[in-house]
Length: 103
Ligand code: SF4
Image (cartoon, rainbow, N blue to C red):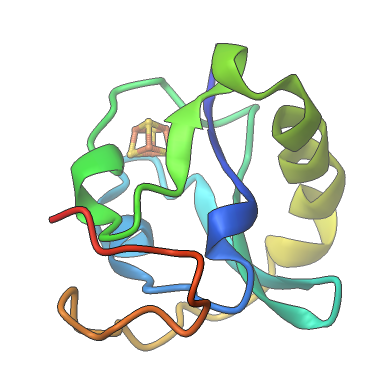
């Protein structure tokens, strides 16, 4: 079961997760008109390396969020060709006031 990126990433996209993934399974994209990233369920090896890299805790095991597992899978084909985005510093305050820094 792959990990997935959830709605907390909408409009945030810190990008450090993309840098550390050993299988390059994470891709930048847009969703609902906002910056987002997705995990390709076909290439994620479920190593968990991306989880501590997300300063707002947006990445969870797929079992915990079936809805976002489907969203990640659906958006992956269009996201695969995206260039790697710039990385936001992990202490950069979240843009969404509902999000909190967790590290
Ligand atoms: S769990 Fe591992 S393989 Fe899957 S997206 Fe995160 S870093 Fe990549």
